Length: 131
Image 1 (cartoon, rainbow, N blue to C red):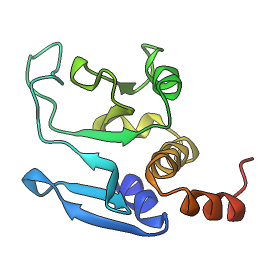
Image 2 (image 1 turned 120 degrees about the vertical axis):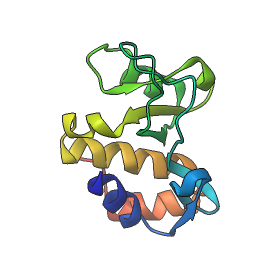
Image 3 (image 1 turned 90 degrees about the vertical axis):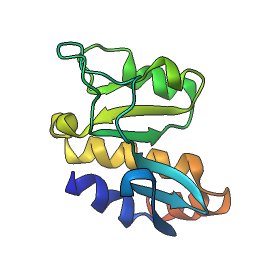
């Protein structure tokens, strides 16, 4: 979990707001790009029926990116009907460890890039060219 916070804060022009339940909401230019959800009825444990208490929302650049992250059943990323048509994916904090630091960094960076103004991503990408 510390990596999510560290990576989100490492992006330029980031502010942190407290969402409901004092959950952090990472923003760029007043737009959220990573946030932590309160337990909701759309994200439940299929075994116990209890609401997940550790869901993180990451914005994605496109529906294609969303599908790429959620199509494989083995992927820790998922979505719910509540997020149909919304450019984001969900990840339980309990499954963050299934990602490498590099994979997690890419998801956070893509989230930031998808929400920042046009000028900010261009400047950031100029300093951090894709490999």
